[in-house]
Structures are given as structure tokens and as C-alpha cells.
Length: 499
DNA sequence: GAGTTTGAAACT
DNA sequence: CAGTTTCAAACTC
Image (cartoon, rainbow, N blue to C red; front, side, top):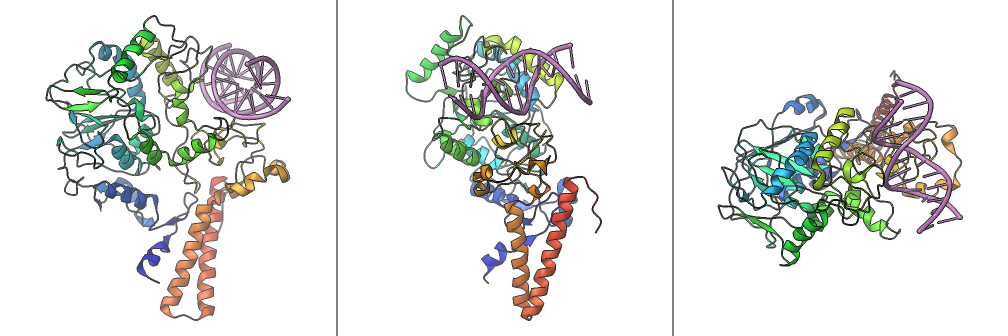
């Protein structure tokens, strides 16, 4: 077996979270490959997380300054303000920002970073799924010479910070990336990045830092087109649209240093979405064949809401829940726009008071061997069997977990073929009043288990063992895998497992 | 498109 | 924290 195959079948067992992790096919490796493809070269270093994971042969990575994003020299760390902070700042500072559109930037100038938001997002999100990694992105500079090879305009807006902050865990970036709006405070001599990775047509949206002195470019649309009750909503909207439409070119903002950045939808929009939300993109393609239904949550931010009573200032409104302002919605009496900043910021605050995590993405990191993630709160379905889109887990195409409090759950199999035959099979809900523990056995777990077995076979072959010996090794390996799977199941169901 | 069902969010 | 109400999306016809 050649080296490549060796790698493919060299697996590590770690079922502490119900999953088997192939050592060369981990998410980490794919993320790093993604980073490397963007000119960032990782070097394994010890970090806080690595200390805790070292026993399982995990490796965390840090992008070191000397191994930088080509062709740019190293500069900054990423750090972040919290999403709730961002939401409030966005709301409370819009008024000021909008009052002085396109004016100069404070002290240090904004600059064209030269890397598209898509590239940044891909790089960042490629390492952002499980919230357990400690990363630091470096290698960003004020160098303006770099342009994307296809000649497209970059769409990231970087602004130098006024103070120094310690880099924060990239897991926070994950939390920021999953909502539709993203704000990264690139510090350590770095910048603020304003992105909207799932709604790239709304780049940039706002800034976190020093909003009293920073004058923002006017964000892309803020009010509902059909039911905007504000007297100025449509007019300002029209003016804004005109700026783009009149030229047919993307809006840009030029700083006093002569540096420009884009304000309008970028050519990266579709590819950005494709790269960042591959699953969701597939979903959308599918839904195109189903009369526009079956949308995923974060894509909904781009879909018009239909709120009639909530003024779009409660979490019932998905635009609001996604941290977005309503845009081309069909809502009535909408206050979720920049014309009602006061009400909006009060509503945001009220939501945060009730639940500090109200604006965090509901679909969190992967658990139970489910690479797609899990619902952070779990669902509470009672009548849908968690097999309709009423169920947030089902809608997000993830299985229910032990976190869920659903009754009669049938959302515990991933196999599409099995799902298609759901109607034909007996109702097991009478046996599984809650989620099936077997939900832990995902295709990934199965695949990883097979990998372990193949690795054993390989080793036996390499060592020249007899077939009987090889068979025994494989069986023992299978036993170990099975033990860990069972332990994982018991762990997930909070039942003591005695070996 | 109207009416019903559903479950999350909000409220008590 | 549990029960109830409100709400908007999903679904059905």
C-alpha cells in the first residue's frame, strides 16, 4: 500500500464525543489545507487546547508570523467583539454613521486589504466548526499590491484599531461567522474586518471599533421595501440604490489615503456562499425544485419575512433573529431597520437580557459524531416526529441529540434512503420516546471504524502475520471500536457504563 | 391563497 | 420553572 493510502487509512480513535476521527482526514486537516491554499502555512504549536487534546493525538495549529499569507508580510492577530456587542453597536451607532457617509476615516486609514472577504471567510470558517480550536490568524498587512488573480475586487474592509487587544480564540470567530454578519477586530496592529459571509451582498455592514469617530459607509439596504412605514425609508433606499444602479458598478469608498473598498455586492457572492455554506447551497438548489420551501435558517436572512405583529423586533422575526435588518421583506409595521434604531437597539437589548445567547447560532459545533453540528438548545417537538421542518434540528438537516426534549422523535437516522422510507416503516416512536441512542452511529463513525479495521489489516500485512493473526487483530480492533461506541452511547444517554 | 398545524419565543 | 399565549413559518387543501 502506498503512502497516500497509508494516510487515508491511518485513523485515530477518539469517541469521547461519539466520533472516530481519521488522523489524516480530520476537519482540522481540511481546514488547514484550506488555509494553505490561501497562502497561509500552518505550523503545529502548543496551545491551551492542545494541552487537553494531546493525548488523543490531536494537533492544533497556529498561523505563525513567519509563515505568512503570501505575498503579504505578517501583521495582525484577529480578535473579536461579541456578537451581542456588535448588534448593539450596530444599532446604536448607525445613526451617527449614516449621518456622515463616505467621509474620511479616523487616524489611520482604511485600506484595501487585497484579500476578498470570500478568501478571508473561507480561511476563517475552514477552522471554525467545533469551537474548540485556538487559532490566531496572522499575515495581514496594509499592502495594497495584492489583487485576486481573477482581477476581482476584494470585498473585505479593514480598519486599523486604536488599541491593542489580545487575540481571542477562533471559536469566537465561529460564533461570529455563523450568523449572517461578521465582525472581526484584527488587532495587534491589525484592523477591523467587516464581513457578511452568508449575505455577501451586504458587505460591509457595520464596524465595531470606535464608532464615535469612525464614519461608516452607508450600509446596504436597511428597510423593508414594501411595508416601510417610515416617511424616509423608501426615499433613502432609493437614493442608495441609485448610487449603485446609476453606474452599474459596485459602490466604493475612497479614503483620504486614496484607498478604496467595495460597498456593493461582490463577484464573490455566489462562490463565497458556495464555499462557506456548501450544505446550505445544496439545500437551496434542492429547494428550487420545491417551490422555494425548505430553506435553512441562515439563508432565511436573505428571504423576506412576513411578520405582521411583532414589528420584526422579536425573535419570531428571522431577520431580526439573524441580526439582520429587514430587506425587501413583506412584513408589516417593520421597525427592524435603520429608521428605527432606537426601538431596534432596545429590542436587541431586551432579547439579550432575556437570553444572552439569543443571537448566537442555534446550530452549534459537532457532537455525537455528527459533523454537521447539533442544535445548541435542542428541539421540543411533540407532534411532528422531528421529521418536518417545524423541527429546527430536522430543518438544519441534523439529527436530534440528547439535548432535545422532543417526544416521539424519529430524527435519528441520516441515511436518505431510510428517510425516504420513513412512511413505510413501523412507528418506532413508541419504543423511542426520545432520540435513539443509536443516532451516535453516524456514517462518519462507521467510516472511521472501517478505517481503524483497515489500518489493522494493513499493519498485519506489513508485519507478515498469518491470516488468522490478522483476523484476530482486526476483531480486537473492532471490539475496541465497539466498546468506545457503546461508551459514547451510554455517555450521551447519561447512563453509567461499566466495562 | 386561505386555513390549519406546529413549535419557538414571549409572557404570566 | 411550568403552563399559557403569541407569533410566524410550515404545511395542507
